[in-house]
Structures are given as C-alpha cells and as structure tokens.
Amino acid sequence: MTKKILVGNWKMNLLPTSAKDLTSKLCPLSKKVNNCEIWLAPAAPLISTVALAAAQSQIKVGAQNVHWKESGAFTGELSAEMLRALGCSFALTGHSERRHIFHETAQESASRAAFALTQGLDVIFCVGETIEQRKSGLTEQTVDQQLSELFKLLPQKCGQQLLIAYEPVWAIGSGVAATIQDIELVHRYIANKLAGTPSQTNAPILYGGSVSPENIAEILSLPLVAGALIGGASLSFDKWSSMLDKAEAC
Ligand code: PGA
Image (tube, rainbow, N blue to C red; front, top):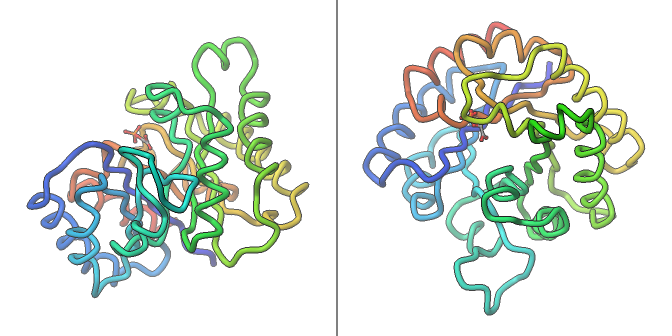
C-alpha cells in the first residue's frame, strides 16, 4: 500500500524554539507510523532548526517557495541550492497565498516548480479555484490552466517527484473543507489530466484546505487522495497525533 503523505505547511508561524519543540515531539511518531509520512514546510528562517531536529527521524523537511533561477539579483527569494544546503528535500510552489496575496502569476508558479525539479527538490505544486471561479462553474478550467502552465515547462527527465495539491482557495483557513464529492471530482479531473502527461501519470495528488482531525479520515479514504496539505492543524502536536492515528487506520 502506498503511504499517505501528510504535509504540514506552517506558513509564517512559530519561532525557532517552538518549531524545534514541535519537530522533536513529531520525530518518534514519524518512526512509529507505517502507512503515512510526515513532511514539514516551515518558514525559511526555521528550516535549519527543523532540519536539525528532524535529522534522526523519517520526517522530510521542505520550503514554502523556491525561485526559478540558480542565483542572482532576486532580493527576498530563495534558491533550490540554498534550500538543499539547509536540509530541504522538497518545496511547495504556487500556493494560493503566493498566487493571490503576492500576485504570483501562473507562469511564475510553474517556472518555480519546473526549475526546482531539475535542482534536486521534490515539488508540491498547488492548484485550486477561488469561490468566484467555483460559483461561475470555472473550477476545472482554473485547475486546467494552472496545470497546463506547469506541463509546458516540465523537464523531460528528472529524478525528482512532482506532487499536485488540490487546494480550493475558499477552503484554506476557513474551517470549511470541500465536500468529499467535490474533492473526488476535482482529483479525478486532475488524475485524468496527469494521465495525458506520460512522465507524470502517477504523480500523487494531495488535498488541502481546512483538513483537521475531524475530517482527515474521510478525506484520506478516497483512493485518489494520496495525502493532505495541512495548515492550521499542523501547528498543534495534539492535532498531528490525532491526524496520524486516523491516517494510519485508513
Ligand atoms: P489550512 O491551510 O489547513 O489552514 O486550511 C492549508 C494550506 O494553506 O496549505
């Protein structure tokens, strides 16, 4: 059975002491679980602390974004090489907060992902519609456009793994996750689209948006859901512990 991947997106939260503490408490759990994996994406200044705390465990550490160039005059950005040197093995790209708050274009998000894949990082490429797009019946078209930008740039061959995270923008941080039916429909749509991209047919598809100990079991029980991208609930050890228990039982 493929392991479910539970990714904690800590966003702009925690400080070195609290990040170290939470990671250290998660380490023994990462060794105990058999059916799931813990991946953590702390804010950039916390990466080395978290990577050090996670060193003897099964936890993977990653970044919340990565730039599309190797190095240069890009104030405020982070290169894949820097992230790898700090202990990252993956990066998120195209998170809706990057797209909507920081106006990252579809092409920029795709460039970040495509380049990182050539630089030794696995990539979780986030896609999802706003509430206006959903209400206008544009969910599939939105996801399609976001993925198409990526597919234009994907390297032909690379040893790294691409993962897609379906995160409806309106479900992020709202406490209202998408319904099981909606998750299934969009995941199926994405899986069909991936099937037309020979190198990525089996890319795992995660769901994100208000995942919690209450709904994770139902969400992970869907065969097309390979895991979860978790924001708010991933800041609490008790919630992690409960979500891992549920994921183990899936
Ligand atoms: P949430 O965030 O779990 O707090 O909704 C998910 C995300 O933004 O990745």
